[in-house]
Amino acid sequence: MRFKNFQIWRGRLPHWRADEVRYYTTFRHRRPLDEDERRTLFAHLLKASGNRYDVFVLCVLPEVTELMFRMREDAKGRPFELAAIIEGAKRKAGKAIVKDTGERYPPFYTESYDRIVRDDAEFEERWLAIVGSPVDAELADEPEDYECLWVAPEP
Image (tube, rainbow, N blue to C red; front, side):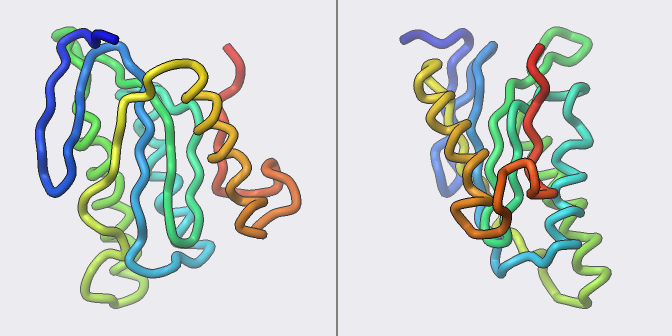
């Protein structure tokens, strides 16, 4: 499979970038987040949706966050940088949480794991796993009962 404008860069983890693809991203939390902290992170991740990226599904659990999305383009026709959006949302949510708790560091690890979703089968598999994760973690009886799960409406 060929990707348009494919490139790889590496922090601690490898990161693949390409135009017009769907991404899966996840990151762990340094400690379990309480309900208010999950809502704070959830709101910051959704804030850029529709402007800089289109989120298909997002779930913030106490110990991990997962989402799938497609990047939008800026005014010059270049895709927004995934890391800038995700890490920016984590930074803003982290500052708010640190302010409330008095902790020294935000409760998120700095780097996120991301990957290009290669096909519709992988997209569906990941989507189902994310949507089912609040029930699997015994945080809700039904996915729609979990406050920090967002699923994009059908187009």
